[in-house]
Length: 170
Ligand code: RP5
Image (cartoon, rainbow, N blue to C red; front, top):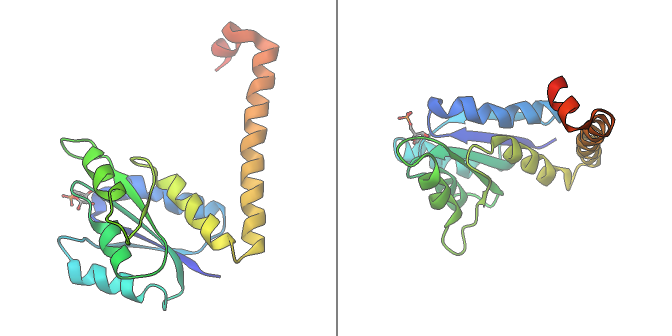
């Protein structure tokens, strides 16, 4: 089975980026987590990206804050799909990272999720791998079915208790 490579610019990104790892655990998708920086470790980052396909990775998640070039630099070095996670940090609270990631120049796309959206990045990476893995596609379908069951349970409880009763019971 192909793996997901999770890269982040700093260990300060780990509290957010762990959400990608958690959902990949839930979906039984193998992954590796690395720290590398487009600015502080440009050669290491380029090597990680260039070697990722041969190392058995099928998708890459890149999380960074500030002037976040990590996902774009990785995408420049590989044909694997790259998912960018803008990290909320610093004076602009992630808006800087979001705009840097989403405004990639033509020809080098990255799929940017929400600020701190590491969980969705993990799900999206799993969906990419599931294109060639029917068992993983089944686990993703079950994951969606669980969400639906959760909504149905909440709605049933709301119908039973009413608004005030639901909030009192929460
Ligand atoms: C970025 O700068 C990292 O991705 C991190 O979000 C931010 C701050 O890094 P540290 O100064 O905490 O190492 O490169």
